[in-house]
Length: 265
Image (cartoon, rainbow, N blue to C red; front, top):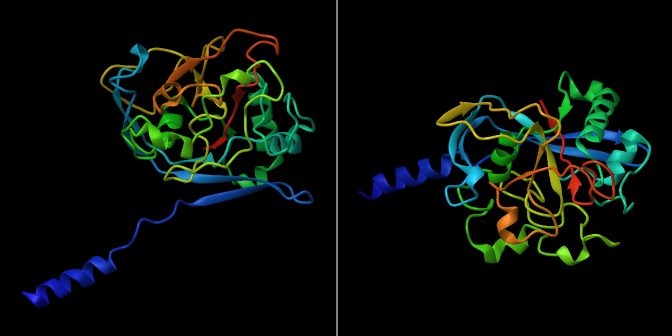
């Protein structure tokens, strides 16, 4: 009996531990030491949506058939400037997430980024995550409301949120990236701080199951995910969906709550 327990203990100790996520770093400006870091998000299956969420979040089973890389933080002013030469944001602090950028501006940035670092990308291309990729990465295996589960008391450890009083005035309520806890896949600020553009447009979820789903190509209503610094806890859930606004003071779909996170595939 004791010998059997000893053997089992040895086997348990010999089992491989959960490996840390693979990482990739792109050099955007060697002289100024501006880089962009990514983690590899593994292919897999998950339930997208939330049964107790909003009416447009009806759960369905999603399979993502290919790995993809996702930026560990929201794209910063410094990273945008290194590619585009200027900062479009209201607040110019280099470590803040870039903001006041619409979907089309993001596409131009991603095209230039791909060209700038094509030798480092080795055949990959920079883009925005699809809505399904975004939620899968945000959950990082969690089936709860947030990446850590359902305990709202823990949310402040992971997210900047609930500061709507600063909307429409300077300084806005966004914070430098990467200051809160990351999810288990090493992704920061997936909840709150800044809405993040997705590649696809807003539309109804399919029924049943889907593999690599992509929403409508309609450019008039794109999805933004994650909530922002002004939203309440329920609005920064993993499953929460928002369609972009048609226009405001900063121009069509430009707003100090809209930013991005780069995907490579």
